[in-house]
Length: 359
Image 1 (tube, rainbow, N blue to C red):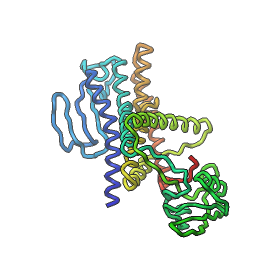
Image 2 (cartoon, one colour):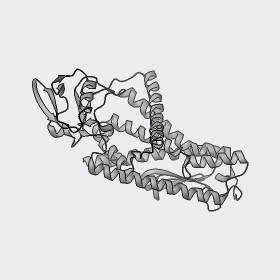
Image 3 (spheres, one colour):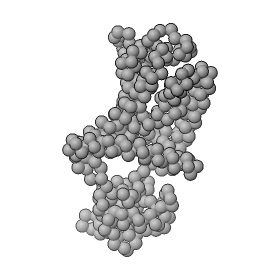
Image 4 (cartoon, rainbow, N blue to C red):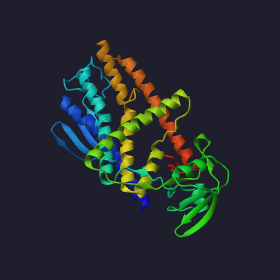
């Protein structure tokens, strides 16, 4: 049953995020006067569908994402100088094509914001408790192996009293691969538990625990504001992370389809709010990634059309083909790297980590 719920959770999360993206392209294409031949929920051969006007609406066999097939978009001669119909995608001027390609990422951002809003409205904004009480434990990490349980209150670390989660985190961080003795209160019983923190990022000691999380539903106004703040925060945080990795010439820690699916599957067992919050993060990530100026992505198309507007002539067919091949190579390289990272991560530790934090 857990496997089935996890699988359904993965299908729904990926499906809704990509479908919303494609719906953005669809609705703006329609409003712009581009003929849409097919709009499907899912990919692959048609399972069920109907014709309404000029568009075929259908459900496809593979329930992941969706497809918008615009007239003239994928034809070999899809060049503004070779247009067969006034309602073809490439028959429209560059400034009308730009909203169509940007509508997909925009809808991903809308979905992320709406989901954030509802999570904060009905469940509340997660806030780590400052109390030194264990919330969640990471599977196979030292804390779990040593017998620490959720709800345990940490009283001392190596004989020194601690009064906050920050105290606990700081003392554990300073002792990677060195025995640490925790004084723990469980119910009415006090006990001593020895753990050996593993060495994590920045040479910090980690034992795989997190503080309890407090949730307080927000009023509508505050939820609207918090949704916007989260949308901006995760966008800036992601860009800042990538910038730091590029500047420092370090490999970014990327999650591919395997890693993301593993995280989604786990979130289906941890609560509805965690699952919805993760859908918002995935939607935001897909929207942001598609804005990168890489050929084959929406951001790449945007750059082509912007170039056409500046120079008053379209990118040559040959240049577009070369750029698309290069873009596809980059995307396949990223996918390969992320997939290898997923496999290595799954072999050495859980796909998601909840570790000590001094937030």
